[in-house]
Amino acid sequence: MGERKVLNKYIPADFDPKLVPRGKKKGTDDLIPVRMMLPFSIQCSSCSSFMYRGRKFNSKKESVKGEKGKYLGIQRFRFYIKCTVCSRPVTFLTDPQNADYEMESGATRNYEVHKDKERTDEEMAAERAAEEKEDPMKALENRVLASQREMQEMDELEEIRALNMKHRQIMSGGAAGGSAGAAAAAAASGGSGGDVSAILDAREAAAARAAAQEEELTETGLSVSEEAMLKTIKFGSGSGSAAAAAGAAASGGTNDEVIHRLDDDDERKLEERRRREEALLEQQQKAVADKAAAAASEAKSRMPLIKVKRKRKEQPSAQEEDAKKSKVDDADEKKKSGEDDSDSDAGPGGGLSGLLGGYGSSSDDSD
Image 1 (cartoon, rainbow, N blue to C red):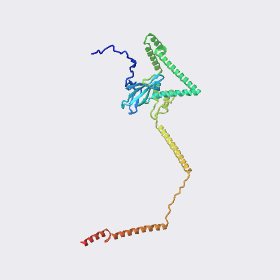
Image 2 (cartoon, one colour):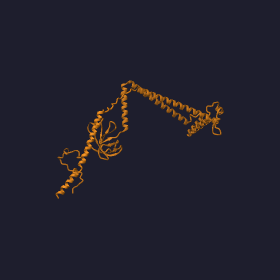
Image 3 (cartoon, helix red, strand yellow):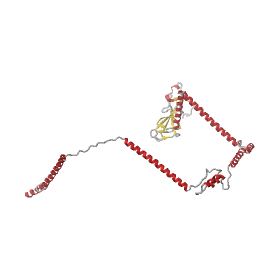
Image 4 (cartoon, rainbow, N blue to C red):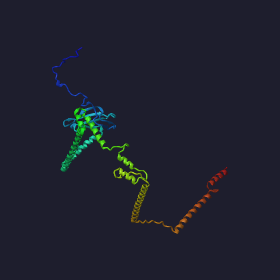
């Protein structure tokens, strides 16, 4: 048995490596298997099933040939996938111009809002630039509006910065006044817990000032003015001038806040007022109805009169009536005469019975 693993092989002296045929193997192509995800949602054109963005596929990739194969020297690629329901081939291309992908065949790309928004913004910007180029006054107006908007934004930014500075001063105790501020500053300089103590001192000082400004309450939990107002409330018919005077004295000479219960006189006045309002409303409604009736009658009087002539039916003359009666009588007589003829035929020797009778008699005679 010869050696299988030889290191040196025999090469004849007349061997020419250029004569060895070289080329691609049969059955090979430029398709490269690639595991990828869908860059956008699509709908199959055959079965109308949806395939959503991010779904993974075992696709085939190839380079695009021809004039559209490159964009500014960047190679474009085509990807082949199959529908998950009907296995229809679907192809899409890379789009270096828009940094996106382009649907080619087999399916349709779903609607995307952000694409329309970007396209609309670009169109509006282009229209604004063209308008400013044609109209210098419009360009000046746009620049003025932009500068005003920028100044407003700067003012708002400065305001936010001022508020932040004020908050920092409050937190550090710099906004506290008097002894509270001194204590807060001393605490702040003494250690890390100075901010907390300054805040607590400021709160206590604010609470003390609010308590001093508030009116002192009585044993019942009400202020003096509230108690005076309660005393002015009288129930029944006795709530008259005396209650008003007491309320005025309690409130410092004014009787604007006197509260009293409605009595019979007040109810009677309200009833009279209601009746007057109803009578006035009825008068107004009657006046409106009279005006409408007058307008309708005036419009009716203005309308032109239309005369309609009807064609009367002509009455038949005496001769025509006599002729009609004579025709009817003739018809009745003919009808009666026809009935008499039929009765005579139905008698003995006539009609069906006569025929039958004659047949029977002839047969009997023959026998």
